[in-house]
Image 1 (cartoon, rainbow, N blue to C red):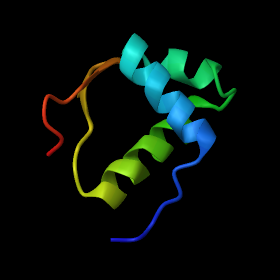
Image 2: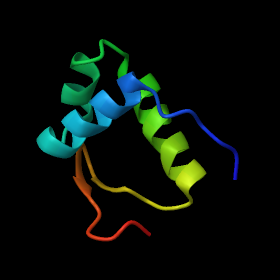
Image 3: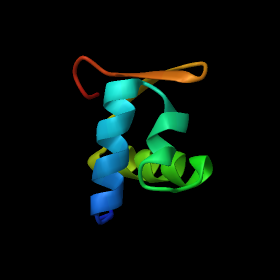
Length: 67
């Protein structure tokens, strides 16, 4: 496991993503492009060795239990 720093922008994007269930909305708050936000979340999941989100087409939902 490699340590990926979880910075303020990632935390902000993750909170908005969890609340709105939309990657597009999550990119608007920290003013990042969608691909950077998506990669940031995937790196966080990889680093923590668990899936935090279920991706349903263009929507996402938090997993009930990170796995």
